[in-house]
Length: 449
Ligand code: SF4
Image (tube, rainbow, N blue to C red; front, side, top):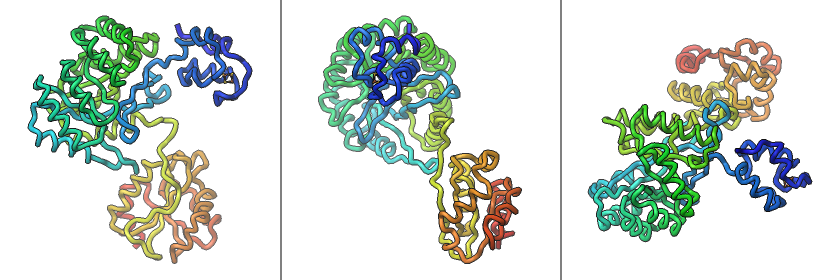
């Protein structure tokens, strides 16, 4: 059973030396109890206390890393069953599978497209995370040729998929980069696969479709063989069974501290679907609950884009809004006569406004104020987007030096601050813009011009 904060505190040195980065031993104990700190951060814990604290110090779900420093995927180490309880921290790796039964040209084309894929979401660049290469032929030669083609076209992390330990051993020898995920140890091959994973210091996926009891037994065998870095595949593939089983695994790991399931999972939505649309839907279910590595069988930007957006939404800490840097943003090539608008630095607000300004085709400047990442009405209600704050940023960013007129367009939602802002900015005319971003082009083309 995990220890509570007070029980842990009694086992600590209680000197409050602060070397763990926290002000007191009690604060450190509370972090340990919440699985938010590593015991190693305290250099003074005795061996006896270490043994007693092992259960409390172990994170409920292990962090698994594959790839290199430049391109790595980290999954696991989650502490919540529901994202709204705090946050999900490590987004699932979205990978695309190729098989050694495909032609080399086909493999190269798919891998190159995956490697080059990049989308811009709320000012951040996102791509796919890696390639899974399956030994569908069962032959060593075909697998090594396919691996060569993959490695020639991407540096992204890899999952090596083979049932035969001989094939896996040959692929690991030929690998020219660090840390793939080995898939998979099964009832038949786990001893050899665990040996290879240990030898090459790679995480090992464990596949057992016979049920959760059988999966736990196999994980125990692999752990006893010296493996710490494990990924779980319970073998479920459809919508309902994967939701049920992945939820059970997460619940047992977090709520019951069942350490044999304290690892991230790997899913294959293409195997539970009859079409590209179904695969995308199932993958989105796995993004939400509870895929660690999600291996797609089809690469289509039309489905990968929404999956990436969904992943960003779910794995964004709801307590920390994504913010734009405050300042003046230019659209087109604005002159001194171009309109000046203002909004908050909540990224979704910014991108809604920016998109509509661009759609208007009219060069503009947009003053993004420091509103602590809140949307317009919320920021206004919190006092972070009032006349004083806007006037302060007009001066701080020397807006008057860039325009010949003295007009500023405020969002229609905060029309109420118009008079106050004119008092804060003597000589300026404050114009009330539309309430909704979608009406900005009409406003600019009509009222402004
Ligand atoms: Fe206490 Fe150890 Fe932290 Fe020092 S490093 S304050 S002894 S928990």
